[in-house]
Image 1 (spheres, rainbow, N blue to C red):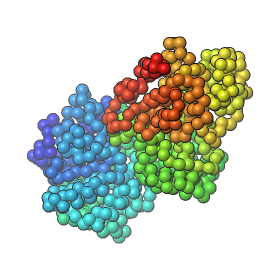
Image 2 (cartoon, helix red, strand yellow):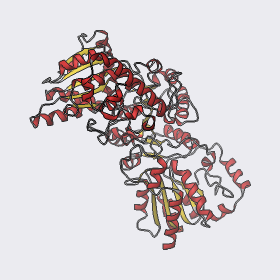
Image 3 (tube, rainbow, N blue to C red):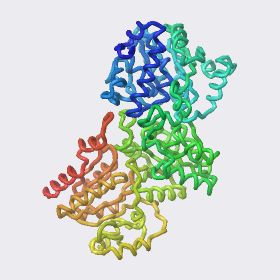
Image 4 (cartoon, rainbow, N blue to C red):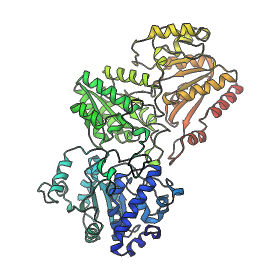
Amino acid sequence: MLLERISSPQDVKRLEPETLPELCAEIRRAILTSSASVGGHIGSNLGVVELTVALHRVFDSPTDKLIFDVSHQTYAHKMLTGRASNYLDPAEFGGLSGFTSPDESEHDLFSMGHTSTSVSLACGMAKARDLAGERYNVVAVIGDGSLSGGLAFEGLDNLAELGTGVIVIVNDNGWSIAENHGGLYRNLAELRESEGKAPCNLFRALGLDYRFLAEGNDEAAVERVLAELRGIDHPVVLHLCTTKGAGYEPAAADSESWHHVGPFDIESGAYDVFPRNRCEDTETYAGITGAYLLNRMQADRRVVAISAATPYIMGFTPLRRARAGKQFVDVGIAEEHAVTYAAGLARAGAKPVLGLYGVFMQRAYDEFWHDLCLNSLPAVILDFGSSVFGTADATHLSFFDLALQGALPNLRCLAPVCREEYEAMLDWALAQNERPVVIRVPGNGVVSRPELLAGGVIGAGVVPCSAKVGCTVGEQVLHGEASETVARGGEARDAAFADCAGLPVSFDEPRYQTVRAGGDVAVLALGSFFGLGERVCDALTEQDVTPTLVNPRFATELDERALDSLATSHRVLVTLEDGVLEGGWGEKIARYLGPTAVRVLCYGVHKGFPDRFDAEELLAQNGTTVEAIVADIRSALRDF
C-alpha cells in the first residue's frame, strides 16, 4: 500500500505520477473505513483528495504555508503528513482531532474549526513574510460555502490592497453544509458554466488575478496549475471545481446529509446521525422546534425562521423548508448578518426566530450588543448545543455562552428544563415586544416534565404552595408556606396541578420556581443541570439533610427577592450551571449574596480549551458530580 509508506510530504513528491490515482483511491478508502467506524466529515474530505495530493507535491510544507479554511476537510492532509496510521489502523481510529491542530504536527499552522478565516490568516502570514524579507508560498484553501461569511470578503478585499504573493484556492463544490444562499453564488455558477470566462467576475472586480480549473478532481490537472502559480508575486484566486463526496455514491448523491455523519455501513450507505443533527425526530429539540415553528408560521405570517447554514439544528429538513416557503430564510454562513437581519425584521414588526449553535453565536457578539440589545428589539434567538454534552472539539466548545450574554443589557436569557418549559418560553418570547430573548435549548436530551408548568413544588409528598402559576421561592419563604408544602400529600398535589392546567406561564420578570422546599441547603439548578440538582438533593435527603431545590429559569438575570429570602433561611446555597464558571451565572449570584452570611458554592466547568473530552470526565475533573458536591456541602455545613 502506497499510503503506508508515506511519512512526510517528501514521500509524496517522490511518487511516480502514474501511481497517484492509486494513492488517491487509498486515501478515499481510508477516509471511508475510518469514518465508518467513528463518524466524521465525509463529503468535504472526499471532495479534496486530489487537491490535497497536488498541494503536497507542488509546495514544500511546512516551509510553504498551507491554510485550510475551517480545516474539517484535512483528513488527506493529515495522512500525507505522517499521520496515516490514524486512518489505517482501527486501534487508532478517532485518535486525531477532526480539524488542524499544531499540537499534532508542524504542518498544521492553526487550531481552527470556524469558517471564513483562511484568507485573513494568509494576509497576515504574507505580510510577516515580506517584512522579514523571506520567500515562501502562502496558500489559503477556502470552500465556496465559506465565502458567504463576512470575514472572507474582508480578507479578499485586504488581499487586493496587500498586493503580494498569496494563492487563494476557492474549492467550489456548489455546497455549504446545506445548499448555498446568496447573490455571490449566482456569479460562481456563471463562472462555472463559462469555465471562468463570464464578464462578471467578483474576484477580478476586487482587483485579484483569477484562474479557473473545472477538473478539480483530476490530480494531474490540479498539479499542473498549482505548479504554474507557485512563486507568484501577486495575489491570485484559483477557482477550482470539485464534487462534494467524490468517489462514494451515497455522499455524492446527498451532500447535505453526508456533510457530517456518525458511524455508517459503507456498502449500504446506512448511517447514524449525531443526536445534535437529527431533525425529523419529534423527540429531539430540533424536531420539536421545526414542528412548533411550522405551526406558528401557518397561523401567523409574521413568524420568520432564520438559519445561518445549519437548518437541521432547528428541525428544518428540506421538506419543512419547502412548506415554510418565504418564512424560512437561510442566510448562509453569516452569523453577524443573521443577527442584524433579525433586528431589522423585529423593528419592522415581524417575529424573527434565529437558530444558532452556541459556539457560532459568539461570532456575532457585536451585533447582539449594538443591533439587538441597544435597540431592545424583540427577536428570539435559539441557542443550541451550549452544554458540556455538546461538541467536544476545542474548536467547537459551546459552553461560554452565558458568560458572554450575561453582560448584555436588555437581553433576557431563559434556560428551560424540559420540552414543556421550552415551548412555553417560545410562546412567551414570540408574544412579547419588549426585548430580545435567548432560549438556551437543553443540551442533554429531551425530557418531559409537565408538572414544572403547574407552579412548581414536586416530589413525594411535596406540592405547589398554591394553585398559582409560577409560585416563587420568595412567596414560599415570605408567606411561611414551605413547611406546609412539605407536609401536603399526593391528593392535594394533583388538585393543585389540575387547578393550574392550561394557564399561561409568564417570564415578564425574573422569578425563580421552588420545586422542593427545605432548609439549611438551597440547590439552584439551571436548565439542563436541573436533573443533576435533583440527584444532589436526593443524596442529601438520604443523609438527613432536607434541601430546597430551585428551578431558576432565568440564566442572566437574578430574582433578587428569591435570593434575599433564601439567604435568610439557608446556610449554604449551591449553583449548578452547564457552562463556564468564570463570568457565569453562578458568579453573579455569589456576588449578589457576598454581603450576606450564606455560603455560596458554584459548580460548572472552569474556563479552558479541553479537546475531545468525555463530558462526565470533564465534570468530575471540575468537581461537578453528585458525590463531590454533596461532600462539599457537608463540609460547608460543618464550618458553620
